[in-house]
Image 1 (cartoon, rainbow, N blue to C red):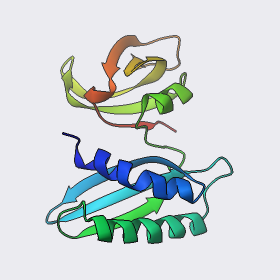
Image 2 (cartoon, rainbow, N blue to C red; image 1 turned 180 degrees about the vertical axis):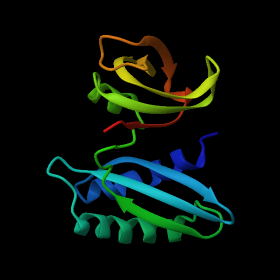
Image 3 (tube, rainbow, N blue to C red; image 1 turned 180 degrees about the horizontal axis):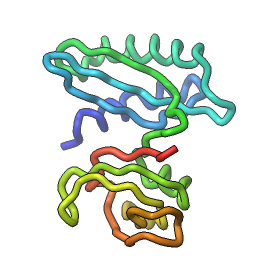
Image 4 (tube, rainbow, N blue to C red; image 1 turned 45 degrees about the vertical axis):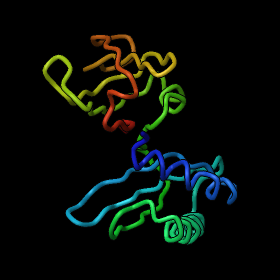
Length: 155
């Protein structure tokens, strides 16, 4: 069974794309009895406040009808920004050679948080040079997308 974030992403992607934008990813966080849904959108020419407003109105209406989130929620729509979160293997591949912060779902080598440089991406496996200054040093570890709780560019 797909988790709620994946289901919501699949539900709203056609709406975002119909507006001429790219759904970069979503984050769904439980905050007490409320939920926070962050929707990140992208466009090759950048994102303006008007884009965020359009997506917010359309996605809000869609979520009101489909009701995939139990209880009350807050919807935030924005560009991924400079320290953009990474959600897919394709996104990691775009940033090979760049520094990232990664938080794993469970510990690897006694820790869950790593800073490193993306060395390679093969299918859903990411090679990461941890504790690296650049792509030529650091210890190489390999993780899968399923291992990652959260990752973002270290700007």
